Image (cartoon, rainbow over all chains, first blue to last red; front, top):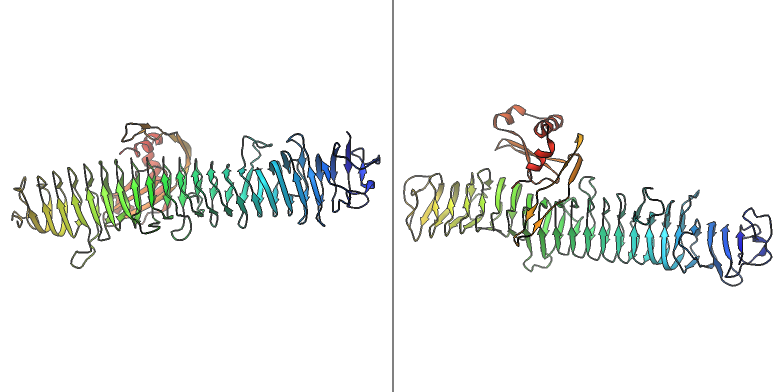
Length: 465
Length: 97
């Protein structure tokens, strides 16, 4: 077993003996072509392999070029390096783990051909690797771009395996790049702007950016996102189900970008801003939030947006049914759902100016409420375009200006604010409080008003029974 | 807006309906991402600071009138004023329900 060195001194034919040497300074001519048991160092272009198939253990530089040479790489460790470009007709078969661009080179290592990997291919060890061709196999992508096709699972810039930790590794699946497989994506500048068919997990500040598309399920952690709010980067399209954790973001410019069509769960203090979804179910938990954008129903089959814990709506409207639970709330510029709004478990409307711009049903249960710093829109006309309000249990309104079509108070619910509407009805033990003001018909059913009967415009005229 | 010093705080834990308690990792902010909301009729200016759920109220009523056509520099100065000597505590309080 010997080590032989190739430098293309005569021509670019692998099978020309004059191209081979027994030392790295190319001073002693080799006596025979390398066998499969030899270690081979390539530092020159290879355009032809006219006798047999080469087995290579180390590639220092050069170009595997047409007409369609095939080179087999048979490495014993994954520390061997390749600074070697694969031409458009080149085929490189790698049978063990290996790394491209491990050593700094004067030029980026590129693949225009086909690389078949049966181990794990490391790309962009310390220098840029760009794939324009096809890679068949799993890859650790530390530094560079994919603008071609990768048939395999990929890890982008994994800091735990990178050969140059702290080297600022990142990898981009660029527009036009396709990965048929699952991906795990790390570090601040790593991103997908191409197509990924499998499932993805994002970490750090990595992102799926417009016009990137992911067909599988996706989880965003840390400060990653489908688009990045603080950097004004719009998100791409995701077909599968998506989970946002930590401080991850879902950000777009309101219309076609940042579209998610699977079910979405926002956890922790993740957030959604000016983004779109066409999902059957969107759930906000913890301190997660939404502002602007569009919630659409993918198939017209009773889609829901559910807010739990302390999650909230900062602004915008929801075009599907909306359920607020567990002290979740609408604040700031939130309009509510255009279909129906249900408030449970101490959920509330607070500090909203101009909610309810749609003739939707608003149902307040449990101890949910509208606070005194909120106002609702009057949609004009005969008020039938205003919301229909239903208050149950101990729910109540302190709303500064609540414009409704009708409002119905049941159980022990009560009005402590100002209501303007076509009719306001009190049932069971519900009541209009001493400070409650109602403009419109006031109706009491089933009981005597308490504590003080309030009439039209707060007069003492009893309502119509 | 940039902060003179990084601010670290931990969002309060959340007790779920099933009784489980969810805790959160500390958050460190080197700058504040502000969204300004001006309710003209209500005379109130608030800023939302990601990822904090409750807005910080800058000016209301007579202070709103006095602020007039405020500038970004005025907003940032007011935010720093409200954050006070203990920005961590102020920002943490905006997580309270």
